[in-house]
Length: 144
Image (cartoon, rainbow, N blue to C red; front, side, top):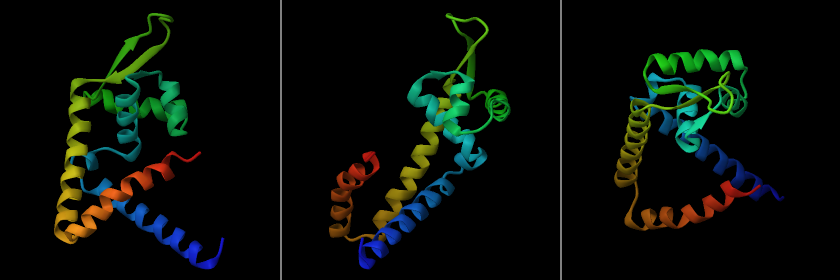
């Protein structure tokens, strides 16, 4: 890859990373939870229910660390624990109604901030460019 492309790629990586960090900070609800706690809630929303060991593997942390995280989320009322029907020794973790509401609130706060930032900083033409870039960025994200 030639030098101008390397600089472009580096600039793109930097600005996307900064945007992600900014979005994480722009949710008062989300700031009350650790990054891993938020990630666990989002994983549960997608998968519906999971074993603690599966969540630990996804987050790349030990089962003991995941146990602490799940205990905190359970104490906050964001998750439920249900005995597995297949193996009663195992417990399935899922989102509670409060956990689902919290995720929706975090997303709403982030979306509101981003919509406001785009509205205040971008011209109509730049807004159209951003809309067109969604497809391109999705291709990059989906690349294996």
